[in-house]
Amino acid sequence: MVDNMINDIFPRLGRKEWALIMIFLLIVFTTISAYTVTVKAEDEEFSLEEKLDYDNLDARSMSFHPSGDYLAVSDDDVRDLLILDTSDWSTTERLTETGSKDFDFSPSGDYLATTSHSSGESNDIIETDDWSIIEEKPIEGLPYNVALSDQYFASGEDNNLEIYNKEDWSPEETISEVPENMENLEFSPCYEYLGATINQSHGGDVYLIEVGTWESEKIYDNGRGLAFSDDRIAVGSEDNSVPIFDYEGTQLDKITTPTNDAKEVDFCPNYNNLAIGSLDGYIYIHESDNWDQVETLTDPETAVYDVEFSSSHLAVSSWDDNVYIYNYPEENDGLILTDYDDPTEFFLDNPIIIVVMVLILLAIVSKSKKDDVDGG
Image (tube, rainbow, N blue to C red; front, side, top):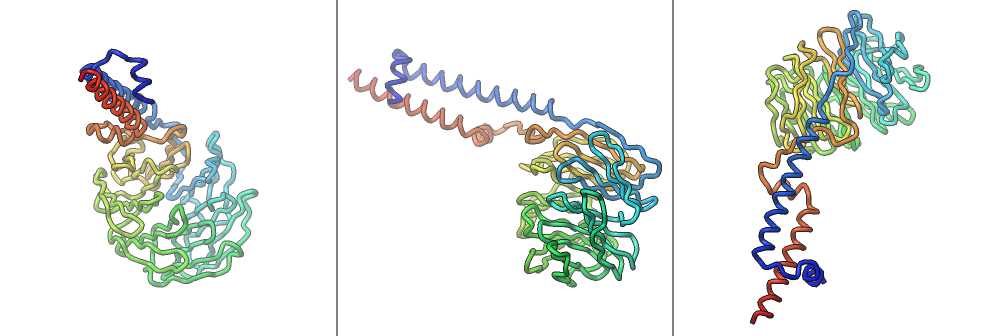
């Protein structure tokens, strides 16, 4: 059927002509690909939208609401928690009765968990419809970090990691195998794992904890920031690098772009880009396909506290007491600057072209055989 169609359209083309057509198509497809990637790179650069210049805003922690409508920012100077409206970056709420050392929104956005700076206080659960405290969990030791999944609330406390059931906020598990002084807590996107990093002054160990069994495994010994993608774990390290692990705890790669501590890391919502906030004052953007660097953000130029993605923004807090808001290209797949130095990569990324080329090749072979029979 295919060869009949080809014969009807191109009845007089020989094998040499078809070979030229194949070469032409290859050049056309490769040129279109290179052009598309170049245009995409130009259109998708991050741009600085806003510099939030608050007086003495010591924003050591930040968290976007899952909708992207709010950004929670700590004001460590007075230990308040600010809720910013991302449409104009105005302050919607200033929460003065809860902690601001660390905080995390639930996946649904209905709750915000917070922890305080001092022992003897509490971790709080806040309902986001009116920003009221609905649950308080007293802390005997020093509080550190909190994280919320679809089912659990994790609280890093002095000497222990406490796990609560989110259905009624009742205690579920106490994990004592993880050392004290946690610097980061984060659930994986599938909520099957909980990652924890220990404060650098206490070793910087990184633990991967299986949700449900709550068994822990140490996967690294020099960690600071921690971020999960759908199948990878990025760990910011004090040795100016970001090692990449799989969910089994096996190191697969290592990013060495930063020139100082890689303090914080975060994946964008579709996991295509990884942001690295460094003490060298820069934010390095890498694509997660091959971990190539695709951009360097030069503001704030002072050491970075935190980096946080939403679907449309990247927020960066700095030692200069400001928060920098970058536009993030939400209507695409993020910055993916594949240059296709190897033609094989181009075809693997565009399988439909392989199908078309195979059909054309089959038609050529079929026509050649028919020509040989007719000529014989």
